[in-house]
Image (cartoon, rainbow, N blue to C red; front, side, top):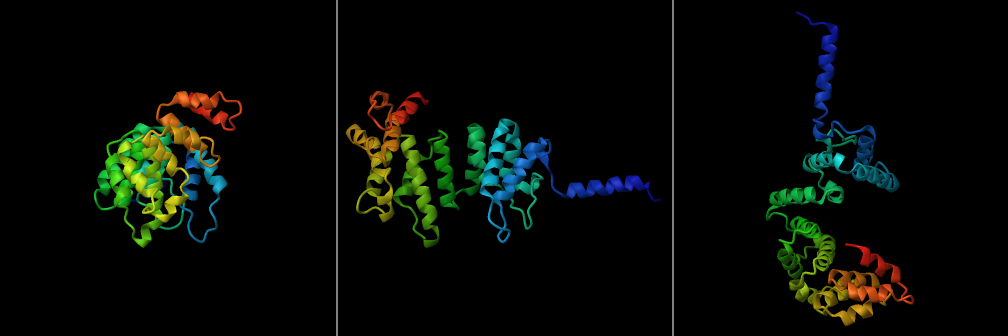
Amino acid sequence: MIGHPLALLFTSLGLVCGSAGNAGTCDGLKPEARSALQSLIAGVYQSQGEGEEDSEGTEAARRGVLAEGKAILPCLSEIFRNGPDQAGLWTQHGTPPSEGHWMIQLIQRIDPTTAVSLYEGWRSEVGGTDTLTRVHIDTELARLGDARFLPEMVEFLAKSPVAASDKQRVRSLQEDAIEVISIRNYRPALAVLRKFGSESGPEYARTWRWLPVYIAQLSDDTGALTRYASEPEQFSWALQAMKRLGRDDMLKVFANDQKYPYREVAQKLLKSK
């Protein structure tokens, strides 16, 4: 028996919609939120040969996503875990990615607690198979306040792999790790930072104008920090180091000095938490 034509039509449409992927937590997005996410995803996954990425458009889409706040968080978490196609947001040609780990950057700006949970799950997946990804995760966890893996970050800095294909990524991870070590004022890292700053350290570390400032911070060398605070290329790191040491008394001296050229920076740091 042949069914009613309308019934067959609705059944056919249902099968087509179902094949497009399970929208899940992204199904109830507001139209403007969906549009912003799709634009952001398109920018991030700009296919080779389709022209240069529209950086301004992508940044505008990023701001639109962030403006949604926690309302969009479940959808971002879905994209992080399973990729934009499973979330019903893939509009590009080609094979869609099976995950969207890059989305964690937005998630941690909206809700650090959710980001920590996702990072922990990602870390357990990586295990011991991908050292560099694990270091990245450990660094971001420490940035968010989870200091459990700081010793492993120091071990990475002491024994960074030097495979030719990994050199640029390793250097980027080193820079991020050292910055977070300063943020957490993790003094057991002082020896390895000093090694980076010595003749036996990598040549490129000599271009890191912030490295001697962070060494002074972990050494509690307030005299050196005071000197660096007057250097045009180092003052911002020096003032931040004072804040990280809890030395608001030093910051107040600079904030109250009307002749100090970076007085406003010191004042802003005094007001920050």
